[in-house]
Image 1 (cartoon, rainbow, N blue to C red):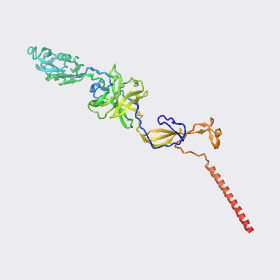
Image 2: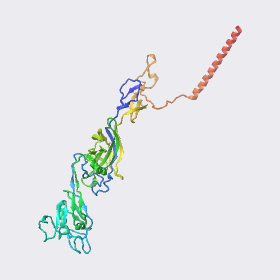
Image 3: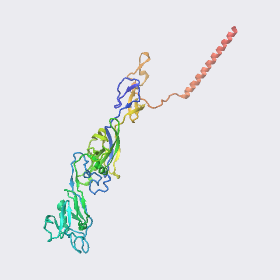
Image 4: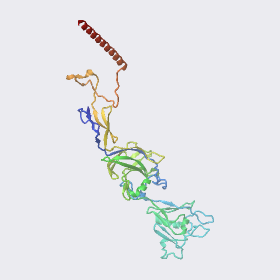
Length: 472
């Protein structure tokens, strides 16, 4: 006897005990609505791209560079990063003095040995194109000022390396530099456009470069779109780390493989004005190509303090609206990150350590078995692995028979003195308080008494028979 209970809350649905009956019915599926998550993100992530990236860049710090993406995957509304200057340095360059020395700004563009001039000379008719602007080399007195070589784009072959570098600066906006020890020239992209320098002159190699010279400026790109497209999957995979995976369920109980990845979007190691920031992504399509969306940014910037603790967001729940994976709609999900569950401590492996990743959904399931726990709850075990409370057995415990109230018909009623809650010991065999040896002794005594009584009856019967025989 007992009452049924609500499988969701565990509360009784009635108060009148009745015979409990259970059938092999199904319980409906429960869609995933919340994910419990706990992990440690490495201070210095090790991504495929970080090993070959230029020192001092977000990519070298194990992070994601939006400029590497056709569609900026940072959260929607994130402004495009401003363009920054980038550099490229040539090989060592020496003049053709008696004892070759590193070239300087005073080194001549042409000359004969021994002199402070380039080993290979620029000649009249040579040219150099810098970001689309062409400069022609001239020989003063022969072609200077003619329509063939306009004065504004001339470089005299008698000029110096410094003159050539000043022309490059006029285009890029940033002055090149020369290493005093090696003569190596460092060129700058500037912020207006990417650097592209080319020259067919053999003398160009004497500057330590091979034509063409290209270098991309830093930063820039587009404003945040919050998604990774099929075109950017390779860049995203190379600049992010795995965040684990969990099997979630939609409203019909269909299992969905929910993949997560973390990307570090800023690093305190880059200096003043920077902080350790991360974005969490989930995979929305495993077959995305071109401009189709493959991964979605959850839209939250996770900021960590220098001691590795999470400083923002301060709440424990992050909402992700409209989650869809390969056409299966999961709806809005809540990612619960309890206090101290998400950290950024140093990790030698450079990968995320996932401590907890669970969810609250399940598929439909059929009743497999039932059991009763110590509290009298009937627990059903279903084929989907769920253990659900089905009913509660009515339990009573009496402090003493003298406290019961006698009723008509040999019945008794509980009183305030006698009533107390009881318990059940499930899956247990009840023990006996019987003393087997004592009971066997009593059994023997009883059997002997029975045997003696039967002897008396037998004797009496024999005497009666003898008496009847005499009377005859």
